[in-house]
Length: 478
Image (spheres, helix red, strand yellow):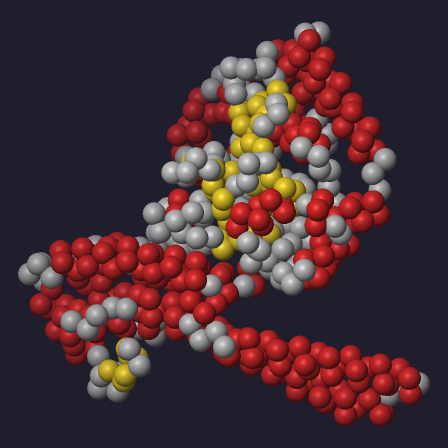
């Protein structure tokens, strides 16, 4: 056994010994203290370097040149994010760690804290600035199996020796080991093969012509097999690294469980929004505005779930007209029609602002519904078959909830525009809309040059009824 394989085996033994004696109660107590939080960001990209030499993680908006107006950067606390409905990070080769308090010191408080999804809305010029204490784990296929340094760690994702492969194989737990052995032996389930055949007909043809079908499947799934090894090694190196920088790995952080509740409560006590659920961002205003982007992109590029083409993908004027007719209840589509027919400007920012206003109005209605419910319950308390003391406790509880809803309504009433809510989000959306405007104007310039455009314009003019109204700049426009 080589020295590095022996070191790997010993490291695994130490990790397993540590985890064996960690109770759920200890993890709950540990994570109830903010000083013990370590932010963890799994990614395919190394941090970027700012002009001043500091490292930062760009938002999705920054990374896509503002094609996607997502202003947030997301992390987990003391563990690597696990796969869920919005994606998988199992193949993300790079893991960035940093003390939570140091990150907050550089960037201010996050928009929301959750053990499974804490996120900052970042300055679109700076991203999430990393402190000097940040620690980066990254692949190095020409180095040792793994190496834990003072400021960073490396591990191999490829070029394993036979002994290294055998060692990692022996440590895999079910179901990873079960899946790994299927790939290694070429014993692939029929439903998996059917998916591969549908994805690429050439695979089916090569499979059917192969003399040794298991050998063919071993080759086809070799990358998947090695992905299991590299993920396992990445996760082991992460556990060693987080301990190296003075924090504990916490494996009990799950959606809505006690550890997540302790984390949320600790944040709330510091005046920071906290959530025990993993759905905080998906229920946020940030997500609502990202959904607005999704609608706009379906208009631009199309091929959405309804099977309708977007304006950029229309093959001819007839298909473009049909698209406008199908989607004429979309305010953005109406604005484009008026732009093509009457040269009225398309205000992309307004689409977002209108979505923002309608969302906060909905939030306020929810608060009012809750208040009405609690007020009715207060009126019913006298009919409850409970002690007078308990009736008084319930009334105080409901009055407290009514007061909190008053605070929420006042908060939303004071945030009339996106910039009132979050200046970083507002600036991100504005830059995104600048890009959209350029793309749209470029497409429109080419469109109106075509001889068929005059016919399209006439058909659209006939399609518009006198009663159609679009709101622009606070005025009624006909």
